[in-house]
Amino acid sequence: MSDASPTAAVLIIGDEVLSGRTQDTNLNTIARFLGALGIDLLEARTVGDRKAQIVENLNALRASHDHVFTTGGIGPTHDDITADAVATAFGVELLEHPGALAILERRYGDELNAPRRRMARIPDGGSLIANPVTDAPGFQIGNVFVMAGVPRIMSAMLEDVAPRLRTGAVVHSRTVRVTGVGEGDVADMLTAAARAHHDLSFGSYPFGAGAVGEIGTNLVVRGRDGGAVEAAAQALLKALELAGIEARIPARA
Image (cartoon, rainbow, N blue to C red; front, side, top):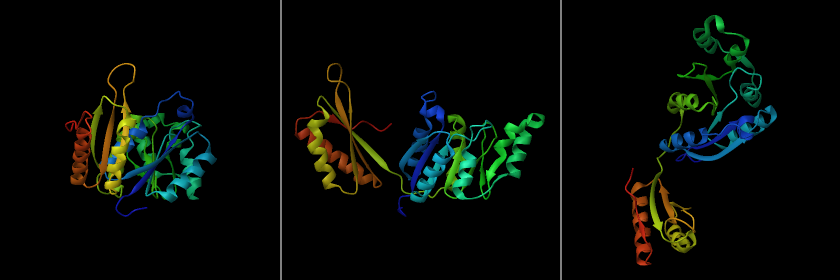
């Protein structure tokens, strides 16, 4: 793991995601959140509500990344087993956290039944992640951040997570939009640009269909030096124009 560029992974937990009943949007939200903090999201995995599978994947990810984010499986029902799995992965007890219990008591009062009380169970040594939407907290233990699966709750939890993270230099990007030709027509120029700028990354993302409508490719330059990214994009644009290929750099949003 690089000191200059902290790395992260996401573990999405839930049978409902794997079955297709629920479409995950949390990964996109987390990726954008991390990108703004200069943290490289390098890996994402999706697992079901199976304890052994969660433990195995969590241990692998937390050993190889600076930060790990899990979503899902911390609610009040029997299949919400993420807290149990995280405690097992860290080799600690799963205990009722006094602070979490107090939050739930304030939230539910006389309606704090046994299922809801399950949400106060936190692995020993864990600290709470605030939930401004429904109050039931997530938690952090080590480099692992355990959050809800419901997108609006997960997004709100990120506000409490951000100050805890080791951040890095933000990645800048610039797009060169090529129209009228396919990806294969510009592949050689993109390869040449990548070879000339080893400190930057270059990606190609085709759009449109050949039969109907506009076709083309978005060539994206990324890097932590904003000036170098801009210069490389301009050089790529010039090379395309000299080859007679229609291209432009869209205005920044």
